[in-house]
Amino acid sequence: MISKKLFYLSILIALMLSLHVGNVFCTEKTILVIESYHAEYPWDASYKSGLEEALVKKYKLVYFEMDTKRLPKDQHQKMADQAWEKYLSEKPVLVIIGDDAGLKMLGPKFAETSTPVVYLGINNNPRNYFSLLPTNITGVLERPLLKRSIADIQKILPDTKSVLVLFDSDITAQITKKEVFEDKDSQNIKDIKIEIKLIGDLQTWQNTILSSKGKYDACVIGLYQSVKDVDGKPVNAEDLITWTSNNTPIPPFAFWDFAIGGNKTIGGLVLHGKEMGVLASGLVLKILEQGKTPKELFPITNDQGILLFSKSQLTKWGIKLPENMASTAGFVD
Image (cartoon, rainbow, N blue to C red; front, side, top):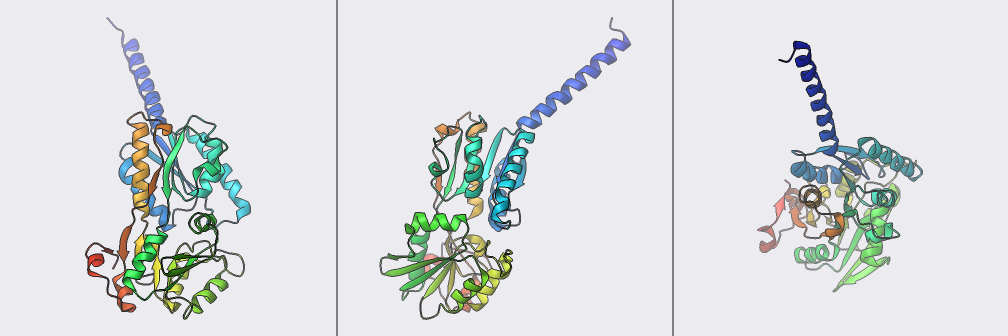
């Protein structure tokens, strides 16, 4: 017969073992998400909603923000080092890296580990970030739908002959110009001349917008979150897109969903951050639930896009969408 002391001791040991197992379980279930940007950035918020919708019921998502849109470049490596320390302390079962800055600075270090990594929102060719293509890393590529977007603008405004494409001067903009424009300032798509400008300072951005009438028939706003003021500080992105909307003399369209709205742009064929998160989650689940390795999963390209428009902006510019486009589009207001 078991004594009371032995009985209680066995219960205590069982409780301690269960707590230990629980802690191990939680560690195994942790996914670290390293954001190149910051939580308030609409792109990050959107792809994170896609990740959480698919993963949060089974996994603990821990985030680290590198904040490279707002911090000076000389602080980016410091943030990458802190992200690495976060990885070491969390010991996650998998790492998700959002966007090019994170993959560029941290990808080679993760390639030397056995931890599976899924990237998303990568505009560059991932091979450019590694001396040898790693076997533990795969993900989702992002390709702005420039040519298809411009073609849709011509369907909406048939007389369009010249389009201005505006980006800030951050890494994504530089890569887009290189990949899509072959690093040229202009390109012809059918009978439309497209000029791309990478602008890093507020005054040049504003002057370009104000002087666009007569030079272009429409403009497309790409990324604008890293434009700096005269003191070198980041301009509030919402204030900048609102100013652009209020002051542009030519119709403004967009490449990303977060730039569409009553005080933003008209819209167009755009990329949606949530879809990026959903696609990345699919790769994560194949790795963690189906036992696939990243090298077995070829990178995915998010190139579908959605037709999304602002009704109030369409009214402001006196634009009526073609019937076949209006019937399949979504609207934000």
